[in-house]
Image 1 (tube, rainbow, N blue to C red):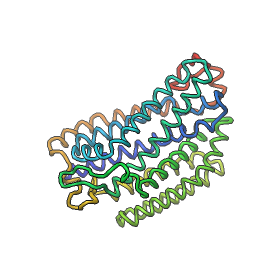
Image 2 (cartoon, rainbow, N blue to C red):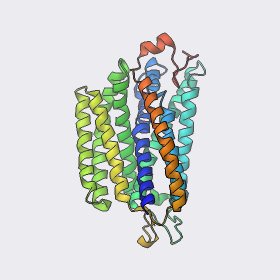
Image 3 (tube, helix red, strand yellow):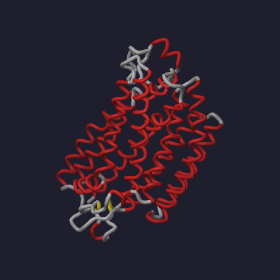
Length: 346
């Protein structure tokens, strides 16, 4: 049981890391149409800001799903079969977005870049919304029978609480991406991102506050209440910091909000991993959904060996690409939108 709890915490950390890092990638993609005129260098500045890191950030999702499959196979089977359509839409959106990053600059055609810019927007907005909807349903629970087969229909997943969860993540990630651009770019993009951080806050702050308070009232534990209050306060403080052009503090505040929001969500879920609204006795828990101790022990040793290497590499990549991106760098060195390689369509 102790190893099962440890792996629930580990999976929670992986999901939180994914939303923290991929959250600003989603936000930048959503904001792309507002970062400059069609086919302008400014849009390429926005894309290049996440160019070296977006695909590495997605590894956190792959690792989290893989850990769910190995540590909690029953959770994985019930969740991803019950949420088949939203998960499929997320995967398709991520594939389209990845292709768009790589192919946007491959042809010197305005129409060609138009379509890939739309793909980046949709491929960012759809996962940003649907991940919130899925995790809200994790916490709320779904109709599930005694064999842990999800009987909820697709329409059941789009309940008011889950829809608010989707709006919350979409707006919060958009704000997170805007603040990231103010920290990572300079010139016109930085100014537009600063403006975007202010108007996106009008949706993000109330959505986060209402969703977290609803979660606390309906599903929360006593220890999650301080997390909820701190998360809302941090978000308000981050918006204020952005207004006064304190980009570093603002980004830290949105990052803290994301971490505390999903900590409160997953903390409210524990010790369940997928509650049943049909009958609480049918719920999947950390105890009845976990793998055998031998599997969990082997996974623990693998994680102890390889996790520091992966974290070290990602920290190193962020350090190497820490400088601000500007339009002058792109027009002078013809940097690609995808990975920082020479752009043949400059």
